[in-house]
Length: 539
Ligand code: SF4
Image (cartoon, rainbow, N blue to C red; front, side, top):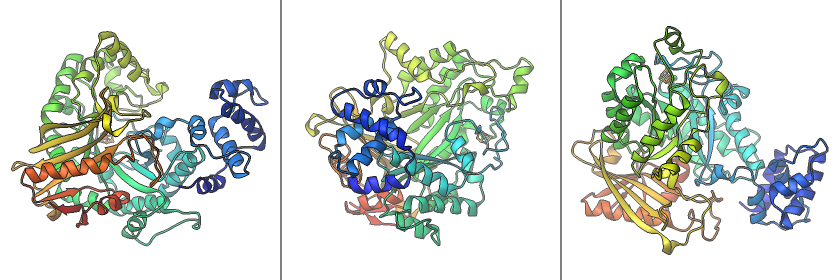
């Protein structure tokens, strides 16, 4: 997006007072002259003694560039931009919550708050924002995009993360409306006050060329809600990634915690999702009722024998007053692990994570005041990494290896193909890795075998499947270049080509990709054609 357009958008959402701007201008000039951001901000405090926020600095930058007092300078903008890590994985994530609604699950550890969708607390980050917007999908997405814009983040590639209880349990017309309104918000342009498309299909087609393209759509559900019919519905809605609570692979533990499904059902659901090309994120909970650190270590191993998720959220069970488990604890029948026990457990299991999996979380971001007993520390990831370092061990998961802001040159990258078997398919995790083992980009190729489940999609008959293409680097506006960063240096095209070659050699006549609505164009430009629910290419 051209600088002038970005600033025009920002002006619509300006949130900075003239007093703040005056201070911010001076601080900005000092940073431009070579001072560090914090050093410059401390040297010129606000009238009340506080230091200027990065949002204030971005505001001053925008004003000064627009009035011609300052030449646009990407390096300066990057320096003052808030939390650059938010967009370093290549896309900008926008999280929205669905309305409060009952969940078919009866899990004893799950909190209930009538103001929130099941399992969420009103003071969790993200949940609070949703509550402020009364769970309206349009305003949740719009306000988030505006806030990110005002902080100088690119917002042209959005991964939409829809949270709230069990998605599949919501009424079908609510699901359709909710997603249509999210697309409307992403399709919103300067000329429209508020867009309201006539149908989901219309909103989706509009998004293929919109200013804020949807490059990933994630919902969360339960394993026993996944069947071939649900797969079709998810594809129809535009979903590309499914988060599912596995919690444990031990039936006795699942029963004790009233999960209401078995480990076999998790295996079946993951198999179906894989065969339909979805990206799979599982939640796994140590310290459930009946578990011990030893049984958790064993259970963790089963994940890689039986389900092999692409991403994993480790959510240690947290004792909350508004969950049924609280009563069990009061009777002395449940004991939460201590912080040290948890750290020891995670340090032991993290090095076992296969290189194809990304560990997104090692603890849920629940404000510690809600935790009745047990670990209250939310910085567990840092503690775990410090301990791993002490032991001389490393975690090789995708998150620990992903290339962040480091620049790369194409020639330095090694091209790797990690092959593993999962759910009847031969999986290829194709990656470009730097000399010091950082992932610059990867592709998940799934080659279904004769034991892969039948999903019923005609698009997928006899097809190899591309489940994910991800190239790292600061999320750049579509079409812009930044020399040395991975995202636009053609790695995606190289990975696609490699996947096509492997599929062809293995005898597949076709390759299909599960494309988000906003990435369809990317694949269409690379020889794919529109199928019914997938983009497909003859080999
Ligand atoms: S399925 Fe999920 S949201 Fe529903 S009760 Fe269980 S943990 Fe809570």
